[in-house]
Each structure stands twice: as structure tokens, then as C-alpha cells.
Image 1 (cartoon, rainbow, N blue to C red):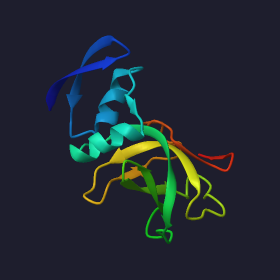
Image 2: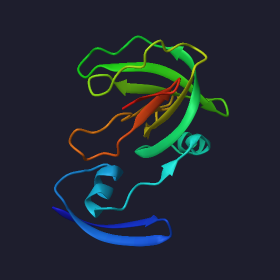
Image 3: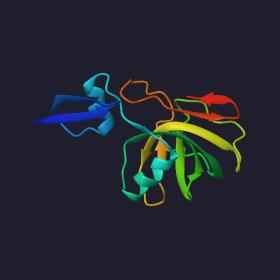
Length: 152
């Protein structure tokens, strides 16, 4: 068991805590242990920086234009999948869990979609997931918005 010192700067306040590690946790999992300190939410502009620096586990919020609607992933947890142009020539795959949140109806190429979720780096541009509430309460709740309707 390792003891990890966690330092987090949020809204100009520095918080320190220790955590007894029995395994590995993501950044969001470690921050949950701090009780009240939240991750920084980045926008579309910062996704380009995250992609270039191969960063993951980043809570992100923004909007993009659908460039391709893909077939649903039906293996295991079902996901609605589509690719968004999030600006500056970058695209990201959105993997929206339709077992936990409603699927976006009538989604088409060219539609604008706003999102809040977690960004994971991939060589193709990245994946935005956790676009729904976490039933276990260990992850920041996300959402998608399309044509005035929220999906969470």
C-alpha cells in the first residue's frame, strides 16, 4: 500500500491530502477522495493542447459539429457513437452510453452537439465519454445537448 500526497489547485486555492493507495485510480478517482475539490473543466480550445500532449482523464465541456454518425457499439455496455469536429481541425469520437442515458434521436451529419464529459487521448483525436450521470457517484456527471434537448 502506497501513501500518495495529492496537491490540487482549483479556483486559486491549494488543497493537499493524502490517500492510501491499494491500486491505481484515475485522476478523477483521486480527486473524488479529496471530497469537494473538483477537476478543472477544459473547453474545445484546450482539447487541441490535450491531444498534442497525449493527456487523458480531462473533464471537458464544449460543442462541435457532427462530421460522421457511426453505428452503435452493442458489445457490452451499448454506446451511441459519432465524430465531432471540435475546432481547429480536431475531431473527437463521442461514445455516449445508451444503457445509462437516452440516445440522441435523429442525429445527422452537420448537427451541432454540445457536450460535457471526459476526454481520453487516442492517436485518432480522442474520445469523449462519461456523457451521462454515474450511477455509483464516483465520476462527474456529463451530458449531451442537441436541438434544445438534454441527454444525461
